[in-house]
Image (cartoon, rainbow, N blue to C red; front, side, top):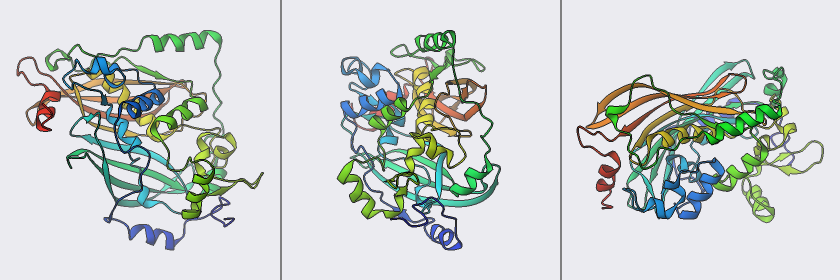
Amino acid sequence: MTTEATQGHAVVTPEQLEKVRSRIGVEFLPDVYFNTQATRDTVRHFCEGLGDSNPLYCSPSYAAKTAYGRVVAPPEFLYSIYWPRGNGGTMAGIHGWHSGNDWEWYQPILEGDEFSVVVKLLSIEEKPSRMAGRIWITTDETIFRNQKNQIIAKAKGWTTRAERRAAGSVGKYKNIERASYTAEEMAKIIGDYDKEVIRGAEPRFWEDVQVGEELPSVIKGPLSVRDMNAWLMGAGSPFMKAHSYFYRYLKKHPKVGMVDNGTGEIDVPELVHMQDTRANEIGIPGAYDYGCQRMSWLSNLLTNWAGDDGFITRMYGEVRRFNVVGDTHWIKGKVVGKRVQDGEYVVDLEIWGENQRNEITAPGKATIALPSREAGTWPVKQRLAKMRIR
């Protein structure tokens, strides 16, 4: 187990790059990640870890009165099925951080749905980097199907990969000051939580939306290790396994293990999200959030605003900067366009996550299909009819 890779000093070799390139375009079926089914409990646990209190997802009695007639999952629940992030480009001992997704959703995720996933690597691209000298970006495409073999969603995901020693030596983030808050600042943050608006049962009609209008923001933070533990409890992890489960997994995937240079203990690189010392090894001042966690925050903003009768058709987001424990994010958005697409009345939005330093760390864009009062279209009902639910 104590190879160069597990000690965290691996470098990218021509052989590794050639091996990754040989996987481009080849479909594969990944191992079971965490959830395989959308149940009341899996959806509720996911929402609790995300901090999403929308009753459409968490209250069976409320959901029964909607067009769905049952609990549904938020679109980003699919992260708990499989995490699209360029996994086909994994290289032993080379650190990677999830850097973005481009999601397309076609059908809702209903209570009782079961899922299968197929993935293929699309590309690997080398780029210069201020953080690590050089980086490699691997991108894959994941297709999610339900038990009826209907395509529920498609997602492109990409991961930035860098040699750990190179990333740690550059120190791009060395001058970032860790967040701290006065009692008054914490009171304001808590107050912003109280201002969160969930549209819910009141339809947001396309005709009533104005280009330029801003979405009510969603707040997340100050980020804590507790938040990330709660996220893992709902969204899962391919690596976080206990006792015999972990060591059996390590025996099957020996390159996953990393040796703690201080204790000799073998653990996983995912500890960058839990331990400052592990994050320091790649030049980050402290433990930081999961990329899929922050992408889900963007989606949380959209579902709050769209209401029960709106449907998120697309969301693109980039993870541009690290979100270190202690940072607070306000998830924001505004309407930038309205149009008719394939018979549906949609709005286009700019969305972003902005921290307490006024840095935009997660820019993105989205499209939402809304009911039209004049045309009499209801995107959720139309999709349910297509799925032969009603």
